[in-house]
Image 1: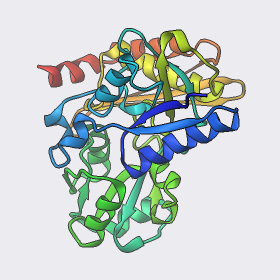
Image 2: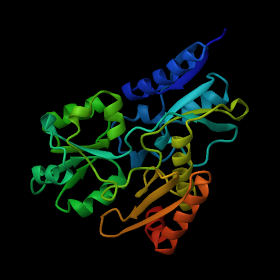
Image 3: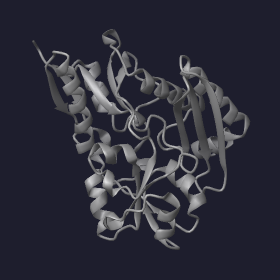
Image 4: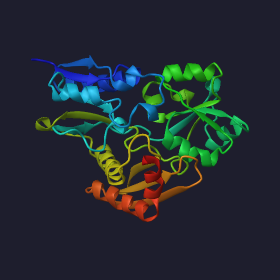
Length: 304
């Protein structure tokens, strides 16, 4: 039987994701073959993300290969995907969600656990490595004296830069650290009410052509649908200061979202709850609450 070709980036984390999906496919009785595809984001490893493009930077070439039938499925970090997919493609399945929070990582494997203690450990004027506008906009309010410096590269590269003294700390997705077996390097996870994660963070998505729909992990899929809906409604992207997370709670979904000014001086936070069987409606409703509170003023000022 011809193996299913799985398209993926070549980073250690991307390969972990693809191999996990491949193992599930093979467990179901079908052979799988991993095809590594270099994306635009991989070709510009040192440029700040806000200078190199928005959504699809790490998925476009993989999606093009999927549409061209050079591969059969694509595996992505869901937070890298556009809220509106290219015509002819759909999200068929998602893996169970890993910890969606951001993580503060101090140099030389310093373990603190408590976020407030980790902040105290940083000192008065730390330099923190992150290129995420969303993270900077929220953390600037908590760390007003900090300097935020862009940092690119895979997780191992970033950790080497940290341990060599280029930064006092990094902010990374906890999910990626845990999946790579680097959980011990997390000094503290950042509470959601301090830094709301990116929509889709911690979720691995399996993308296929629309005529190939399959089953999905329902809990993670519902969260992803709600989070993608709020991005669509607000016209957001991966380099806008927008965070959103939908958490399963007593049979329904509770959603937290934030839009913050890049300097951290203004942050609009709203929460909403709703049934898990209509997650997109919850996302749209929460987007409406953010708009009524003035979120578009912040977002539109960054689009001009």
